[in-house]
Length: 194
Image (cartoon, rainbow, N blue to C red; front, top):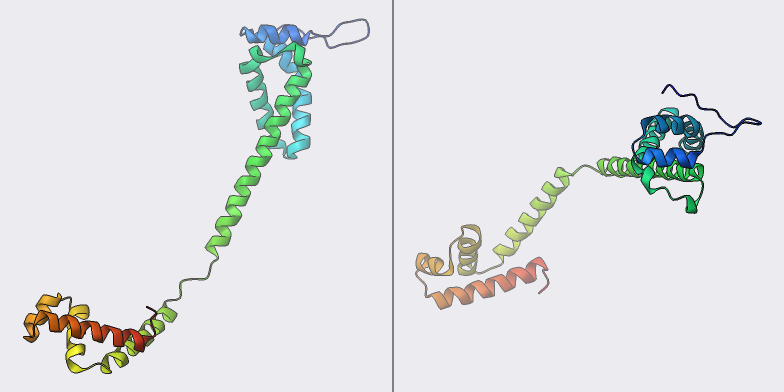
């Protein structure tokens, strides 16, 4: 960038930003260098006011200037001055960064809160299972011997009704009736709703 940019001084006209943007739209690197020299300071200042982090501000300012380079052809003079367009890009990009940082922070807080949930209490579950087994044993002891045998073979040993009937030497219909009656008594004893 060998050309010298003359900023507006009394009696001297500053660079025409619209003309520079038009040249940048056609890939003119020198024009971009001049445009950069004029707008980079105000862009960085605006972004610093929004972000308050110098390192992030510089990063976002570079992103904005890259966006100016890439989107110069989209600039429309009838919508406003070049500086207003560039500053709008800068403000939007800075606000996006703040929102992104806030969303990341919210995710981290949720993850931290979820990781502090009480640990799974195995002892409580073991005690509860033991109490349930005791209650089932007590209720099974209230069944008739044939009901208890039928239920035990079917539900604890995995036999089908037909296999239970064969093992006990009793007709299948009788086994089904005994099982139904035994299960009803178990349900009532355990207090399970129908």
